[in-house]
Length: 351
Ligand SMILES: [Mg+2]
Image (cartoon, rainbow, N blue to C red; front, side, top):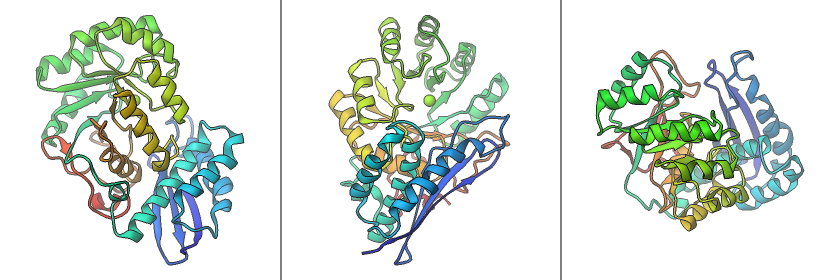
C-alpha cells in the first residue's frame, strides 16, 4: 500500500487568472496533481485572495484526514470525506476543495497504473470530441473580431461569447456567416422577462445555445419558463454541486446542454454518476471549464467516457493575458480534441 504522506493546496496567482493546485504525495514517491475551483475574480481584492477559503478546506479540513491512508482507495476516501464534511453542507467551498483532492488522487492512481484516467474509467467511448473557444468578456467589437479570427486560425469552428449585448453576436454573425457556431453565456445576468426578450433575439441569430439565462442562476423554474418561451436551446449547470441538484435541474426539463464543473461537483468520482444522469435524461453533456491545467485535463478525461458527451469547453486566452498554470491548449483536429494519452490526468501532455 502506498500511504498518503502529504496533501497540499496552493494558489498560483497571475492577476485574476488564478489556479488552485492540489498536490498529493505518497510513501512510494508518487505525486498526483489536481485542481480545485479558483474563486471569483475581484479587482478589489488581491489576486488569489478569493481562492483562500478553498485552499483552507484542503489544507486545514481534508489533508489531516488523509495522511497515512491508502491513496488507491479513491471511492472510499471520497465517501468518508463527503460524509464527514456534510455538516459544512454538500454545496460550495467544501465540495470545491474535495474536488481538488479527488482529482489529485485520480492523477496519482493513473500515473501509478501508467494509464490515462479515461482508461481507468472504462476507456474513451468517442474518437474525438468537438471543442469550442470560450472567450472571456471582451466588451469590444474590435477585440471580439480579432480574437475570433485568432480562434479560427487556431482551428476552432465554434466560439462562446460572454457578452450581454446581442449586438456582439450580431456582429459575429454578419462578419463570419452561418458557418461559425456561436454560443452565448450571460452568467445569470437577467431576470426571466429580460432573458426571454434576449432569447428571442439570440434564436434569430441562430446561436447553438443560450447559457445561464437568469438570475439567480439556480432558479430551475425560471430557467424552464425561459426555455419554454424561446426558440433557442438552453445550457447550464456549472453552479450545481450534488447529484440531487442535477436530478432536479434535469427534471425541470429546461436544459438541452448540461455543463457540470469538475472542480465544483467533488471531482471525477461523483462525475461518473452525473454522466449517468445526463444519459438517463438524454441531454448533451458538455463539461464546463475555464482553466488551463489539471481541471481541463480532468474534464477531457471525463468527457471521453460518456455517450452523452457533445462539446468540450476550452478557455480562450486573449492576446496580452495568461493563465497562472504553465500549460497550453490541447491540439485540435478539425475543431475537435482527442483522448489524452499521457498517464493520470495527463496535464503534462500540454506543458
Ligand atoms: Mg458559463
